[in-house]
Image (tube, rainbow, N blue to C red; front, top):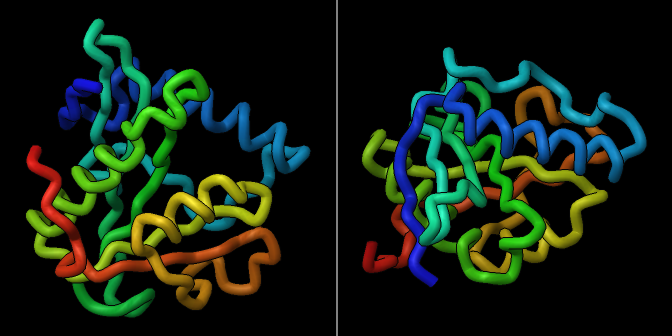
Length: 164
């Protein structure tokens, strides 16, 4: 498939629509809207936000990067935030392409490590990150003690070229 991955503002209308879809899906999975500890990401703390569009220009996936304070998981780390693929586009490979683009953007920001949190009610996401080379790491920051949180990380130096 031929997707276009491009940077957009965090509050871009298509990015906002996809994030709202993600919230509805997660609210349904967890049975409430109270399933994300910590400060929600925003345009103020997510300097990189990528949007994947299909050949017709329809936005089908998104994800961003939030730099982390060194005391949270170590120097030069960024957290993947709001990675989401619309249900109709799952299984097409766009998630992997978007993830690699996020990792490349992380390296361009000077990050040495990419980390993320996903939840216990998202086994598909857990399998995806493990398949893509992410390793389980201790819960960090606001996720510490979170019974529904699973955290993963990967060295940026482990990123495979994507040919993008």
